[in-house]
Image 1 (cartoon, rainbow, N blue to C red):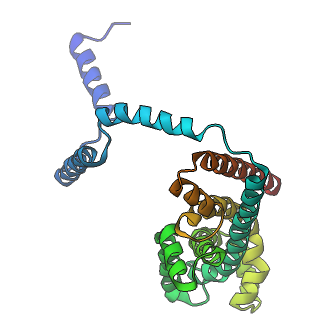
Image 2 (cartoon, rainbow, N blue to C red):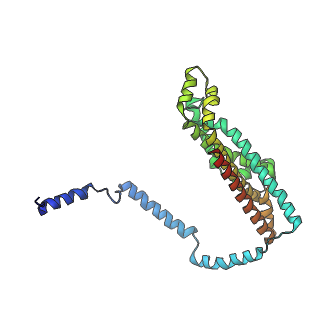
Image 3 (tube, one colour):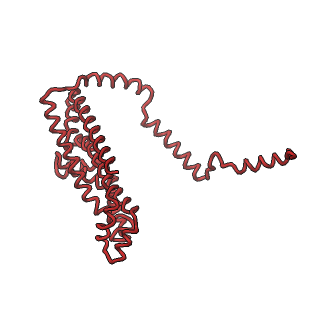
Length: 278
């Protein structure tokens, strides 16, 4: 067989090169402008808030001295007993706030879910409500409730409840929107109303996903309830704030260690429960 002439080989090479996917996607002028603006904002932000090398070098010895003052942790039995009561209160805040939040999330998510909401196009009102709950940070909710109901665990429980509605409301609604349509259509064909369809087909189909989201919410609530004590919303975080305010660094290290163990244990338990559900 005769080999192709050099011109034909060059033509084939040119066609092959044209058929190859581009290595870099071309940018439109608007996209390139946005990219440059974003890079400029990042560079300015790094100059304004990022630590300088000198600050990093100077901060390491100071952090080392602080850790040295926190060692060894205070293992006094009376102190550990007081911390134990605070840990129980922290878990109670997380548990009660999560349970109330999950219960309230179910109807709110149903009303906000697209395609299954009994209020039709007005579902965006409840979707906006869920977005509001999710947008406001935990500490802001805590400050609002501390100012409303006073210092203590009640403010922390209300804060966790609002945070859980924002978290579970979104994921419950997404699970309902993605649920199988055939069972719902079958119940609708025999004249079932929206509530009957939700109870008979929608919620049973999405139950595993909602339980999974609820366990994540509980795990998240335990971590959040620790921080809420810093603004007076009860729990172990309140003891941590007092320890740092009074320069009782050994007490602070004990509390930090206990918080780490509690969060680790909660993650282990929720992971096991999720594995059993799946």
